[in-house]
Length: 382
Ligand SMILES: *Cc1c(COP(=O)(O)O)cnc(C)c1O
Image (tube, protein in one colour):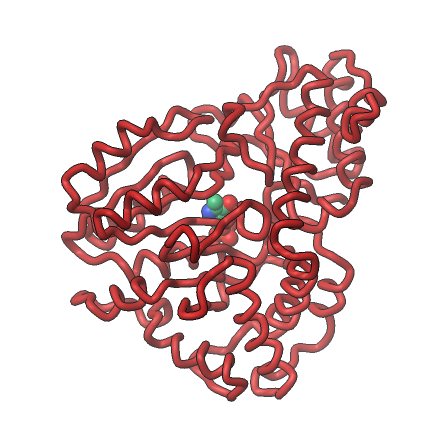
């Protein structure tokens, strides 16, 4: 089954090999070396500055989100959530549970918030942290991080970007833009099995942790993990909680593969793959949930055309391709989602098989489409 959902995604043969086999001990010299190098490579992947602090801990995207919230938010804090969908709702709730006063700046489904609405949230200068979902996986919308980073710095607010459906695919310049936390999980564009929570924090973010009066849950506490991460970067053994050793070995390999041609090539490849998929959708008369100017490169949220529905997904599965249903509350019956990130962007055959599977699904619904023309549209042969 070809896994073309917005995570987990297909992974490279080298990653499968690095991940497979008996678990190595976390204190084995080759594991310590891989761990240290993987942390260094995270900085490169995030285009983060030398003074930033990478973390790789066992967990999921949700754990990474919780870790960022737990270390930066305490009772009484004012925070802004730029809400573009399902995962923004989740981080709002996390901040609320820490006792924060949450201001949500909401967008219509498939769009980003209006600049005026965002400006109103910033206007009194009271917010201490701004949370943004870089690509919202429920709508396929991408927010532009740079102006938000700039505005937040003017008001001394820290910025946290959930990059779970974006990191390693969409442009993110952590140092140049002055973002404070960029977080992700292993199973999306990073190209690993699920199981790791990953993030890089700016010195200002780490300093905010030190100023917190509220206690931070121990397993999520940057202060617990920081000496461990520093030890691995110094290639010294260290222990707080057992690293996911197979994942760490695979992370080192995957980041090595991603960084090989440089990040510009990574961003370009994802953009090209996304444009190819969008040409194929258009050639079959399909429309996206997301507005054109804010559509992500990592996935497509495709509206079911009239007369079709989940039979498209069932048929695609019978054709060997797994796709995902909708996720946005209230709208999830009206569209489906296709992931196109990571390893599959290096595999034109994956994209072609996916387009053919969707064409078969439309055909099963009695809608006539030209599958060959859609495949030709992928590489502009059409
Ligand atoms: C997938 C995803 C998450 C959640 O990650 P889990 O590993 O499922 O907990 C969070 N945010 C975004 C943007 C995602 O795409």
